[in-house]
Image (cartoon, rainbow, N blue to C red; front, side, top):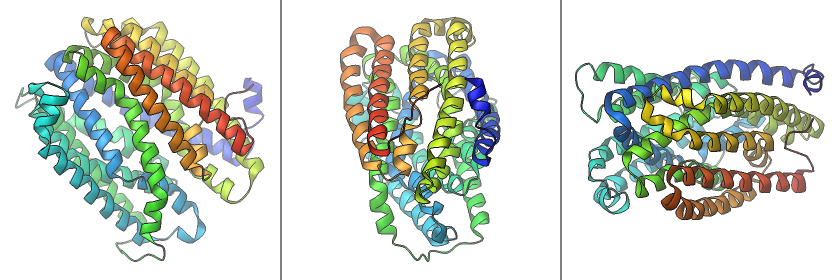
Length: 431
């Protein structure tokens, strides 16, 4: 198996996947450490209950922002992979304006419906003060996502991972450390998170403006057509985020804040399993788009096969280590978090299955089959909601983890089958 990988790394694409994914992983590890420190601070200063409320808040931010960004963050990768679009300044600024306005409208709707969200959906009056800080974070996070998508399209992958992942908790942790010196208010985590995202949005905009060489809203292409092309991606991206957070959302409805807090820590630890997947994913997207657009099908198949092998081996090793030391890792946050060890095991198994299946989303979205992918994830979302509705009230966090993992199995199995049918390639791991 390892010899097979070695035989494939003589070409430039494979070398770039290895070298850039390594630097991506280093930056991502920094972000993960910052994320764990942020979660650790919340757990130690405020306990599982506040950690649970913060997790619910983050769920609302991520789910709403992904709608507000309108699918532009992903579609910009395809747009700027075409030679005649590489220097199109105007389209980027138009996209930023559209995403910000759409997100601002969603934020206003959230604030208007604040009482309904707090008292009717979650039935948690203590969640009410969090809504304001959640709502004003949404437009700024949308700016971060669009800037990240643009920089990813320009192959600035380290900047992409910093904006979309690492920077978020790096700056949030810094602000948390400052704010906690002056106040022990329960809202410190969400306030720190807002200011961290705001700073990240400013940095992302400055970097994008510098790369484009100025500001202009003139473009030779229709933004409306780009929007129409982005809609299936928006739906898919929204569903993916909903899939990732349905379990937390349902736990917020059926369980106490403490249970949500413990589950959130388990979920964060399980996310360590897939950092190789996300590392390679960011580098792979423009390569797949370019090789497919250039009709270089041999290279297209080869880089997918290599990337899947590389990803699965690392994911399997990391996942196995987390499962082996799961109780110790959870105990770092406090003994009450060790209750999540079964949940953590189930979630890690789901991530390993995803890595085995390959890069389903990117392959379908970068080859023009985004509508098929949208349909797959829509069905998966309905399945996930149904399974969570059945399992979460009866089995709590373990039920939520089982629902999430079963949905991952279904979603990836259908994706593998569709890629085989449409593109005549195997996306999954093979020796």
